[in-house]
Image (cartoon, rainbow, N blue to C red):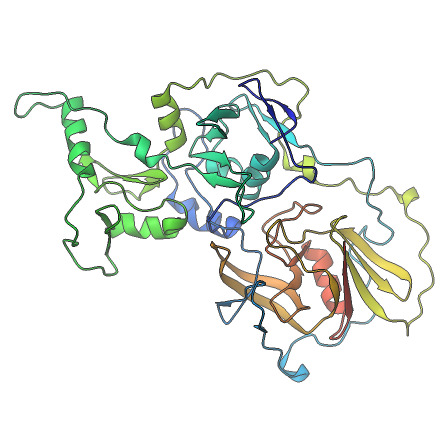
Amino acid sequence: MGPRRGPTGKRFGRRASRPRVSPGGIGVALLIVLTLLLPLAAPARAQGDEPPIVPIGDGTDAAVDREPIDPALPDPALPIGEEDELPGMLPAESAPPPSGASGTALLADWAPPETVYVPETGHSVDGVFLDLWRGWGGANGFGYPITPEMEEDGRIVQYYGYARLEYWPEDSSGNVVRFGDLGEEMRPLLLRRGLPGDGGPAAEIAAAVRAWMPLSAEPVAPDDAAYRFFPETGHGVGGELLAFWEATGAETFLGSPLSEAYEVGDVTFQVFQRGKVAQEAGGSPYLLPAGELVAARRGLDTAPVAQGDLPVYSEELFVPPAPTPSARPSAPELDPNAERWIEVSIGGQYMTAYQGDVAVWEGLISTGKEGFDTPLGSYNVLSKLESQTMAGVIGGESYNVPDVPSVMYFTDRGHAIHGTYWHNNFGAPMSHGCVNLPMDAAAWLYGWAGLGTRVEVVP
């Protein structure tokens, strides 16, 4: 985490190059899933109005005909086809670059904040936790932070309304942030003896205790579209709860069920490895704030802390300032016959499009995050697709992103330059190996660069 002192008094170290991460083993098509889950949100709650919605993947890599292209595969995975079968094969006439692009320089005195303050709960979000929290929708994904960073069992963690994020810097796959298993911590602790027919809390606890008792090794009903049994936990999920479980990422987010569904009054509950779901009579299932529930059970201090000199969170903090007119040099004369080529700088997270030796567009981009590095080398644009649905599983992370625009493949292992509408964090590695561009820049580049355009990926 950030190079500062956390609540335990220990100094939490950050690596020299600030990692940008995805959760370990968590598949996340982040904004797409947010859109999917908005109708499933919980009723308004007294404290805070963040919807209980969990995105499940960031979807930055490609699939062809819905078959995933894994950049780690050694064999070609991309069908190239003939030129006349592909759209947009010829470069457009000299269309102007996107507004403000020509002559834009990376401002040396600007950098996005590494820590922000969230006034709704009076806590901050820092480093790789901030990357994940922002990339997955902020409060719409995990809720607001409700504790500072702290150490639990020797590991740095932070609680949010609907999740606990854990820091695993030793993870060999590069997934240095994981979801905590909150479900087990919601197991009923005790059962008070009571008279037959006794109601109130004892009856509620008794219902929960019975629900936590595993079923036999064989499911009570065969797996089908309305029921699924998990022999590893001895529990199953069915009906509308099963549909909700699948919509929120199945095992990738909520994990396997730890209890059967049980009723308390007119509300049905079910506990999973990483969360708890509720459904009121006649309503749709929704997530309960598992982070708040476990923090309360542990007796954690959720009192607000002082803001200090931290900036208040806003996505505007992460948008580079526009260059002033005086910073834009006059456009040099272009040789219409000069080679058009593209340079991708990994270290700078920057792209420059050249015509000859003249830069006609330059700006911030996002390349592969740690463990999914965009490969260095000299390549050529192999194929182009105006739009493509990208879906599959890479490195244990699921994604399904429809209508990815302005796709230009430059390796036969699935690496592409394409437009990106699911994040605005350009200037930081965010993808599984592709080169993410802002939408307007990608649309212009798609028309400007033809098949065979040289692509130089440099350190």
